[in-house]
Length: 115
Image 1 (spheres, rainbow, N blue to C red):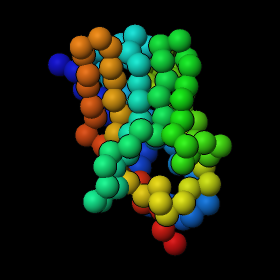
Image 2 (tube, one colour; image 1 turned 180 degrees about the vertical axis):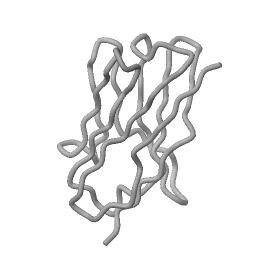
Image 3 (cartoon, one colour; image 1 turned 135 degrees about the horizontal axis):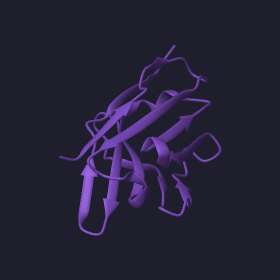
Image 4 (tube, rainbow, N blue to C red; image 1 turned 30 degrees about the vertical axis):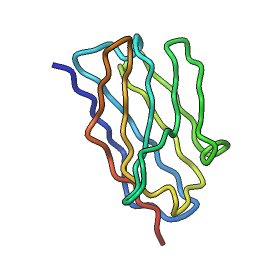
């Protein structure tokens, strides 16, 4: 059974930092393209960052220069390092693993940016 588990979400003040983790069981994350997505209340889910199996990354325009995505294949984990957080970054953050017709989602982790 495949499971993606996100962790690291929290309440943080504007300008703060967080690191989200996505850990998998049942699949080898290093063989999947991984994406972080987020969904705020009343808004559509949007892509935040992606990383290919080769390590190439892509960031959404709203997070460029503030967020980075990385993977640790030995730990079967992908990270989203977030800095200079803004209230508009408040959302549930989801991890996605995709390979061919296989497509898996985690349950999400809440990030709230507020003073």
